[in-house]
Length: 101
Image 1 (cartoon, one colour):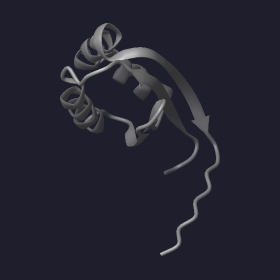
Image 2 (spheres, one colour):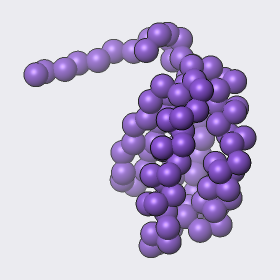
Image 3 (cartoon, helix red, strand yellow):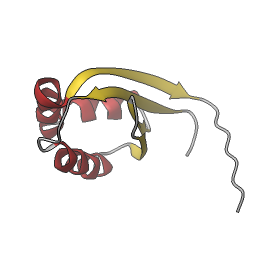
């Protein structure tokens, strides 16, 4: 990825049960991938769950946050799926990687 770029770090604690969460999460990932400026996504399930999405610009992040389907998922998350979450928006200026293959 060309630097700098931006990451949105979504850290959360889930409520009990699925209640349609897995389906919506898959749908949101597919939709995010179609958005202009989307670069990628990574997630780790645990306590807490962490999902990091990568974007070309703050404008791309703003547009994703305002997407109608994403707004619906955000409200559903507040009502049914999360007991807590935090969102951080960060500028990535450097990255390091190790691969042993």
